[in-house]
Length: 276
Image (tube, rainbow, N blue to C red; front, side, top):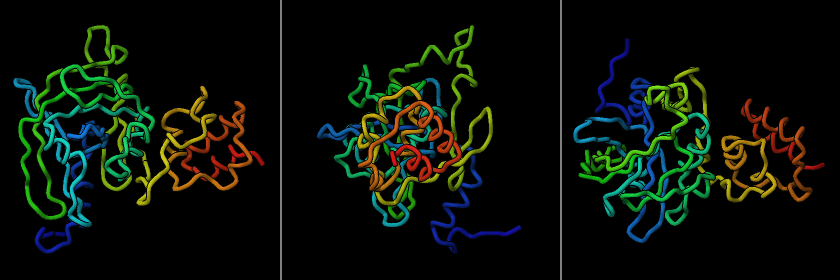
């Protein structure tokens, strides 16, 4: 057994050990809005529920380890004191991952990740329409845990409204975990799917993925490729050069590309879709 003194290892290494060991962790898919009305959407796995009366959830946007900067979500909740915590399921995990790309503050991740904004009832930030459960919250307090890279910021949220998709309820009106099909976060690229086990989602590009909003309309508007499929195709720096030849959206080609995406081979999927 190895023994580690946190004061004697680099923050990034300690961060990796902690996230690898304390797992799986639920994901707060947080939608916020700036004081200027710019919407932001980003996932956080430092998250859980801590009280039912009053209903309290806490998530923690940490300062970036590499350069000690803060995330737009943190800046927004400090400014506006409101957030929607959306619950992410397997059907939207690739889109959720794409939304974590570090786009500029003026960029709306709903559009980049292909999600639908749904107006909240009690607060200004929109909900993710595709999320099976959405919690509208007011922010009671933000507690900074430090000032250096890696330091967390506890966002203490009081739930004002809960929205639940009836399709995930059982005959008794309770949330059915299999119908909910939630995903959780582990270390590295690893995620958990409660009813099936572990799977990987490569982290979004350090450079910016083009986003679903930049995909050809013929790809976005078909009945075969899912939101997860589109998110994988959209996590590239630029569209393939030979896309000028056009996209083949025949059923057989789309299904072949989808199978390649399930295997994680995004390049081969693009090559399949582009006309020769």
